[in-house]
Length: 159
Image 1 (tube, helix red, strand yellow):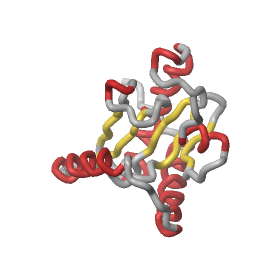
Image 2 (tube, one colour; image 1 turned 120 degrees about the vertical axis):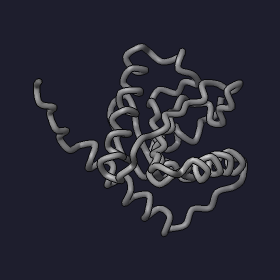
Image 3 (spheres, one colour; image 1 turned 180 degrees about the vertical axis):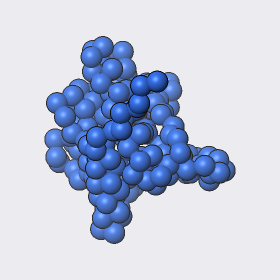
């Protein structure tokens, strides 16, 4: 099996705007974002479906996706997020490597977001030519989200 685009990104062979990088997972900006701040959370282990991951890696992947959603809310002012996974080819998975889309939602954006989801799916088969200005925007968003991800979270008061 040939190397996926995610494996190339993890190896450093392709550019990416990283939000997070640890021994088990990486998180980086989607180059064709559905909404501003769209992040992909990807295990380092090259598995097509969740079933191929260890329980610990699966748990870490979901915990990281959750934390990134909270960081998007703090850094970008989003109100909620979609956590989207296409778990296998029959589920319309286009890159055969487990990944979770963390798509920020800003409120009153249903029609826009639905349109962008359709656009996102149809453009995946098209060649992509990156522009320097796009990479700068993605790098800036990644830095904002990463900063919020690393910031200490307020501790809720005990009742």
